[in-house]
Length: 391
Image (cartoon, rainbow, N blue to C red):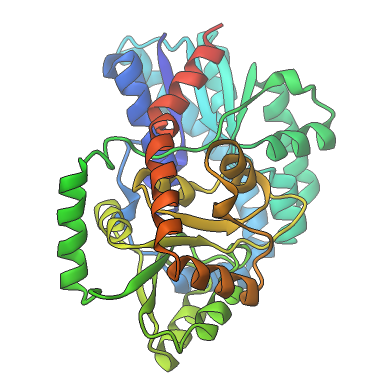
């Protein structure tokens, strides 16, 4: 197999950068680096800051930007595909498979697969018609749907991260389920590689450095988006303010940056670290006692939460709303102790307090994660994908 992996997230600072890097490194390990080419060149986006000001500016000009993006992406698809094709020919690399993450209005992968006669696999993490048209209410939804249907039709296989994502696309566009491969996200096994003694040393060092000693650290990690339940999370944190030994840690940044900052300015039980590197994230997770995923509950929870898998990689017990893939993974491979029935602040604070008061429950949850984590690495996910697309 000769694989060309096209994923713009390889060069961004977005949370999906770790997904792209994880799969890229897994492909190289499984089929050999000499058999993999990527576009763009992979970069660790966790080192890049989130520009909150730019995000605010973009939201105000979304109508104009949508038109510009559509025209620009169509033009760049031709330009980018010519560049990649010429580069591959110079290197005498003839791909047998082209795997590309869907990026709105981009059809680069279709051109390249056609030129080389390669199998085309599209990676779809988001039903664009829903996210852009329904959630964000952006303009040019009709044109976006036309593009999305085009790439799905052109693909030999479509790789999606959740059953709900697949079902939404099939129902909306009338595709058969057989065209789709459902493979959840994972974590970097070469990031979370330490033995228990080393992990304990890292944990102790961080807790001493940050003055966490004697504290029960509850950590939210991920981008600060409204559907991540940030507002309910902050209210739950406030309800637990009188419990001085429970301290909350926020790792990540995004559109609700100001909301978190405003909370930390008026309360003392939350520390906001903002965006951190992958190495720093790992060490903070090792130093934590509980992770939290207070996602808002809805019928179209098509996500495969990346940071859930980072917590699993760190063998960190966590709680999350029983919705979508969170519920599937917890019920199939972990236990119901990891789930909360909704993300209301009252229930969230109650469950956190119950786990804090129950060391036996903490230990049993940690044991479950340690026993199951080996099957959730990016290597395992990539093996599943490569097996299916090589048929």
